[in-house]
Image 1 (tube, rainbow, N blue to C red):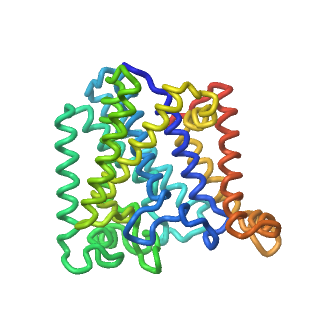
Image 2 (tube, one colour):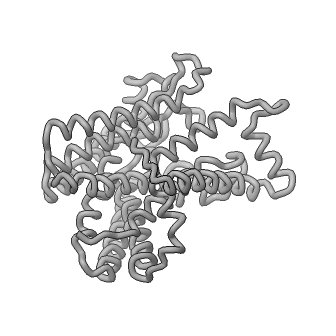
Amino acid sequence: MTRYLALDAFRGITIALMILVNTPGTWSHVYAPLLHAEWHGATPTDLVFPFFLFIIGSAMFFSFKKSNFAASPEQFKRIIKRGFIMFFIGFMLNVIPFTTNIDDWRIMGVLQRIGIAYAVAACLVLILNRSGIFIVSAVILLAYWALLLSVGDGALTIDGNIIRQLDLAVLGANHMYTMRGVAFEPEGLLSTIPAIVNMLLGFELTRYLTSIKDKKSSVIKLTLIGGLAIGFGALWSLVLPINKSLWTPSYVIYSTGFACLLLAAFIWLIDIMKQVKLAQPLLVYGTNPLFVYVLSFLVVTLYFHINIGDSNMYAWLYQQLSSVLPAKLASFIFAFSHVALFWYVSLKLYQRKIFIKI
């Protein structure tokens, strides 16, 4: 099995980007590429979450390889337990520090989606062979496409889509995210189903990648796969728009294509050109990805609950930067400083050989 440092760097840059796009000084002043698309379409920011799912699928391959992909009852119990832990931690991040009325607690979120997708995808890769995984992935995307369009007029609008209708019925409006003044859950129950495919494709592409002994050949093949996926996703978007909030199948294929291209670039830079020192910060960042993500969320939550004068610490820190820098630059520097802060935390954990698995 061929080992690629590029996979670790890919994991690292994904975590760094998640912190960067989630922690602007103010959402009122953000550079366009660091914002999500208004509805249809995709910006670079819209690729970060599917990249995260892709790398979890990749990590699953190495994890299950150690046990020769044994599908034992104990293994399934561990999978369900880990999925539940991720869901529970994500839910707790929504409600800490318990200042919101219980009737308004948001149930779903990023980690909750990851937990559900992981539990399903991990079970599938232990039960099915490679062909089975691709068949199931295709069935999921096609069935979800049909489901999306089943409600008729307004099927792809923010207030008329079936994802929102199901979440309203199951979760209730008060337990959902509010987007553009509408109760809509971007990490909804139904839209988590196609997200499973992002993880499955990460798993299978890693299996394929590690079977290629010539790394130059792997760059060519990944670039070809990535280009075809982006092209197919763009072509599919003519009848089914690329939409992160609805997690449309065209978005799944499109984002996976970009994951392949970025991974190919890292393989060329790190594994072929041997620029390991250049990528070392990313390798460090990828050692405790989920823990660092949770920690960054908790720190930001803490900011909002520390009062400084008539403001909170989050706003106060941004105000200090915006007093000497243009608003958008100040917002970017605020976010980037947190990328640096949590990289330092990752570095200290790495140096002490502390690896916290969630």
